[in-house]
Length: 448
Ligand SMILES: *Cc1c(COP(=O)(O)O)cnc(C)c1O
Image 1: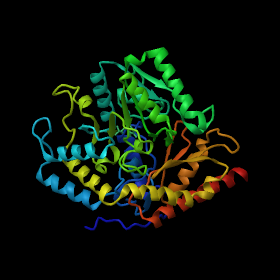
Image 2: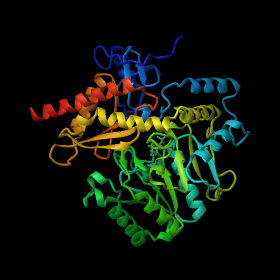
Image 3: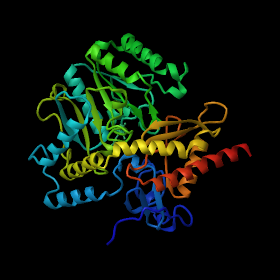
Image 4: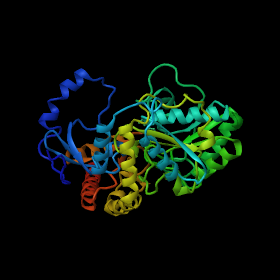
């Protein structure tokens, strides 16, 4: 069977098509409604930057399964690595008997992450699990409990990671939250009351004031920051902000944790997004793009901090699964050998010029992001009031035309663009053309 999908968009008939629509009842009956869904289509196969659904529609993928398939869907090297490893062995549990794939991923991450100090890596299965373990390691290392997180942060949906996530709805449930999580104001330059140019300095001052008046710096184990806040709305931390956090952590013996689960591994046009600011965190969490779709996550950081947990305290039954490790080694090698860091920068250039008119449209409050992690913030014309309704309408029209884009943002009004880094120029520009038309159409409808 030829499983490769030609890199062309195909859209016919209604959305969802009849085959996907026929599954809607079963989905509603069999699955809880808490499982959200951006587009009600069922996928048959995918390659590169195209997803093909069971009705034969082919979508240009500007979602990458939420920044996961950076090397493209089913990259041949990833597929081969997975097939070969599955045939050899699928699982031993690394805590029982060991294998080279785990070491190979750790070696790569220890070298690729910024800083030439001694580093160690522990593997997990999900992003939330990596975040939880980074906090656990920081608390063990410092003997302190308090953790500072930011407004607009997203760190996952488990109890601790969900408590660390800013947005209450839909991410947190009823009942007690995890304790000793403290939320500080985050810059969000576009919306900072004192103006974008003052966002870094003023928000950092509010953070340190909060720490010193409400917690005590000597009680803080970690400050956790996404260098580009993904779910929060693709908010790039302004110049000087990450280095201010870095200096403050160093001064007070606080562990700086960079959550690079979405922004890391070439997505922003640097291997890690902190590199844009020349900042070296103590711990870095990775996941999403790490194993190109297989469940794998990691905490990488200073060897002496990583060693704070006693033997047996880290890991998990599936953590660092051998098939996921094989996929990660292939994906990391593709990222390096195919020059995907540079490719992400090129995607930003092409997108900026393709969207130049759309960016100037009255509904677009801001175009922002880095590399291939880009976004349009949709607002009511003439001000900054979020317009989630128009953003949703634009996204729905894009889906209708065969372009997958995602909504994000604290106010649900940010159209997020996360194409696979291997997307070819023509397909990228075709997708951006559709988006630009739909942004303009929304403006025409609003002014009509
Ligand atoms: C997606 C994400 C997580 C959570 O990862 P899961 O694998 O969904 O648990 C954590 N942090 C950031 C920045 C993310 O984007």
